[in-house]
Amino acid sequence: MTTIACKQCGHENESQRIYCHNCGVKLDRSSIPQEEKPQESLAKQQRRLKKMTNPYNGFFVGWQRSLLNSVLCAVMVAALIQCVRPPDGVPPVRKKGELVEAPQIVMILEDANFTHAMQRLLITETDSNAYLGNTVKAKKIDLPFFSDALKFERVFTNMNEGTCRIVMQQSFYNYPFYLASAYRLEIKGGKLEAKNVGGYIGRMPVHPVLMQTPELAFQDLWAVLKREKQLLDKMQSVEVHKGNIIVVTKSEPALLR
Image (cartoon, rainbow, N blue to C red):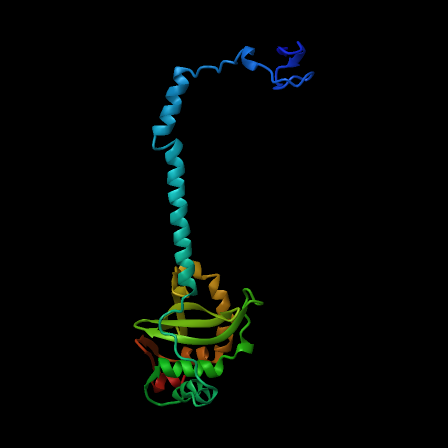
C-alpha cells in the first residue's frame, strides 16, 4: 500500500491524505506515482469517430428523435385544438317560445302517408333543427362516456348536398363540445338506410371506420326518433340537398297495400 512520509515528523500517512495525521502539516504528494490512463486503441478510436459522424448513429439519432417527437407533439396539439373548436353551421340556441312554434314534422309525415297522390315534402334545415330542439330533451339522452363531466345540451342538423350531418352538442364542464356523425340517406327495400360516411369531433374529421365507438353516443337519440324513422320507412325516396331534405311520398297503389 502506498504511503506518504511526513517531512516534518516522519509519520507514514495513507496515500489519500492531504495533511499529516500526526502533526497536521500539509503533505508533499508529488512523490506519489501517477496512475497512467490506458491508451485508447486505434480500433476503438475509429468506432467512436464513426459513431459521431454516421447519420444513423450517435448524435444524429438523438437529433432525429427530438425532431420526430416535436412533430408528433405539434400534431397532437393541433388535433386537440381542432377537437375543441366548434364546427361550421352551429345554429343559434332557440328560446322556449320559438321551440313551441316549431313545425310538427312527425304529424306532417303521418298526414303524407294517407294521401292519394305522390307528394314532395320540403323540410328545411331550420325547421328540422327547431323540431329536434322541441322533441329531443336532455332527460331522454344518456351519454355513455364521461357521464359525470359531459352534459347533453341539444341536437341539430347540417344538410349538405347528398349528406345529412347530425350534431350532438354537449358541455364538458360547461365548455361546449360537439360530436357529429354524417350520413347518406336512402330508402331501400322499404327501409330508411343511413350509411355513415364519417364524423367529426369539433372540427376534426373522423374516418367512418373509427366512428363505431362515437356512434354509441347516438343510440339514445335514435330511440327518441324511432317514430320519425318508421314514417320515413314508408316513403318512396329521401333526397338531401344544401339546407333541406325532400321527402317523396308513395303513390296511391303503394299506399293501399
